[in-house]
Image 1: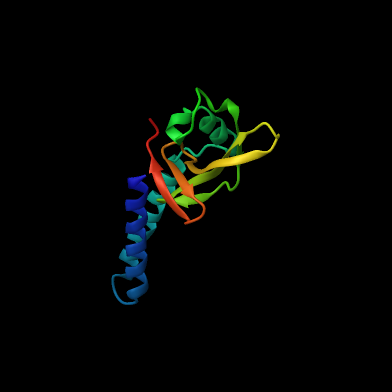
Image 2: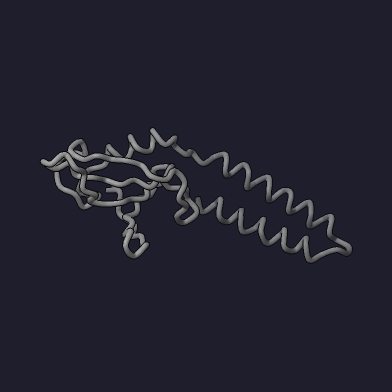
Length: 138
């Protein structure tokens, strides 16, 4: 991921320099920018982003304690995804709300999480303050 960010920053800088050029040497910078852009595209294709279903299944395999919840598994909870591409730290995340099923057959939300679509990061979303906290995957 850092590699993608570094390449993206390089492309951004080079494209800015090309835009500021206009005189001699512009074609050289243009070639560098094209090369950097090509590397960015290659790096993006290397990212393994799970489908929504794969990400939800991966999330369901997490231990409840990682999410600050009780129990031995998440099977006692209802798990629904909201948005499929919420960017956090440059990584697309799946917004997932976890509900506890109670005796009255109504679901009560117990947490909203952002799970990286490549499985590398997990965040808890405080919907009231719109802030996120990174959680350790274990």
